[in-house]
Each structure stands twice: as C-alpha cells, then as structure tokens.
Amino acid sequence: MINAFLFDLDGVLVDTAGFHYQAWRRMANSLGFDFTHEFNETLKGVSRMDSLNRILDLGRVKLSEEQKLILAAQKNSWYLELVNQMTPADILPGVNAFLEQTKRAGIRTALGSVSKNAPLILERVGMTGLFDAVIDGTKITNSKPDPEVFLKGADELNVPAAQCIVFEDAVAGIEAAKRAGMFALGIGTPDVLTEADLVVPSLEHLTVAELLAAVDK
Ligand code: B16
Ligand code: MG
Image (cartoon, rainbow, N blue to C red; front, side, top):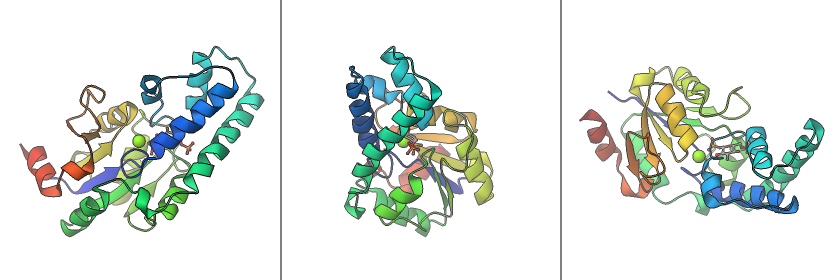
C-alpha cells in the first residue's frame, strides 16, 4: 500500500540540473579545465561543497577551505542568475498533471531536495505550498546518497518508509531511496539509473494509476 510520494526537485520537477551543470562548468573553465556530461551525472543530488570538491579533484586543483567557499559562492551566484529567470513554464512536462492526479488519489506529498535554493525555486515556478512537507538543504546534515532527506520527509508526513515512492533523476538519489527502504522510481534512462525499481523517461509518460499498479505487482 503506497501512501506518500517524495519528489526530488532538480531534474524531476524542474530542469535546474542543466543550470547546475552550466554554472559548475563556468567555474571549472575559469580554472582552466572542463568536464563531461557523464561526469556531471555523478554530481546530481550531491551537496554544493561535495560537488565542488569532486570537480576540484578532477581538475587536480588544490585550494584552501577559504578559497573553496569563495568559489562555491561564485558558482551559486552564476546559478542564481539562471534560477531568477525561471517561471512556471519551466516546470517539466507532465509534472502538473501528475501532481493533480496524486492529490485526487489522496496520496501525501513531500519535496526531498538537498538544495539550499529549493524554496526560491519553488517560489519562482509557483509551486510554494503545493507539498505537504518540504525537506531541503537547510534541513539536513547529510546529502544524498545518505537517506536522511527522504527519511525526514516520510517522518514529517507520518508515513512508514515502505509506503513511500521516491521520484529521482540522480544515481545518488536512487541510492538514498533504496537505503531509506523506499520504492525508487527513476526519471531518466535505465543504463544510468541501474539501481532504480522502475525507470521512466519523464512524468509525461506515466499516470498515478499505472505507477500504483506497477508497484503492486
Ligand atoms: P544548492 P536535488 C541537488 O538538488 C542538485 O541535484 C545538486 O546538483 C546540487 O549540488 C545540490 O542540490 C545542492 O544545491 O547548491 O542549490 O544548495 O537534486 O537534491 O533537488
Ligand atoms: Mg535531482
């Protein structure tokens, strides 16, 4: 029996994953190196400072903690330039219809994002107040693949982990969902999201009834 849906934000509800990629690449380029789309997959769902450390390791750049904080702030301001241009039109295809079906089915909802910018993004796209609980980067100490963000979401909704489905586009997020003891629905491709219980290309290709039937099997 499924009673709650926990949604990742970046790459599931809105395409801010592409904005993170652009802003991190701009930072890497300013340091004299670049990185690929494949490497970017490993950054999804990972916190800002962990992402920075992974990128600096890739470019073999060694910096003090103080210099790292300056770079992280610079990346975030480039990222926010893109976020501030967002409108409700940036909600990914199929999301609004899927959320309406979710409400009609009486399923509780939570946002589970490690982004500290999640409340701003929700506001930009007109989604503030749409979820029964919002867990974002300001409320957790461990980023994905740690299950904390989803366990907190389930806890706030008062729904046991086994009754939750997590919607995720990131390898780290799928791992977090499985470690939380939840059903993991991957949004993307099965070759990347190998540990997901089910993968769909986007929410445009799925109805709540189809998903619940697939989980019941
Ligand atoms: P911020 P999610 C994650 O959000 C992103 O996938 C990841 O790329 C980003 O580094 C992280 O949030 C932190 O974001 O810099 O805005 O605090 O996928 O968990 O919604
Ligand atoms: Mg994501």
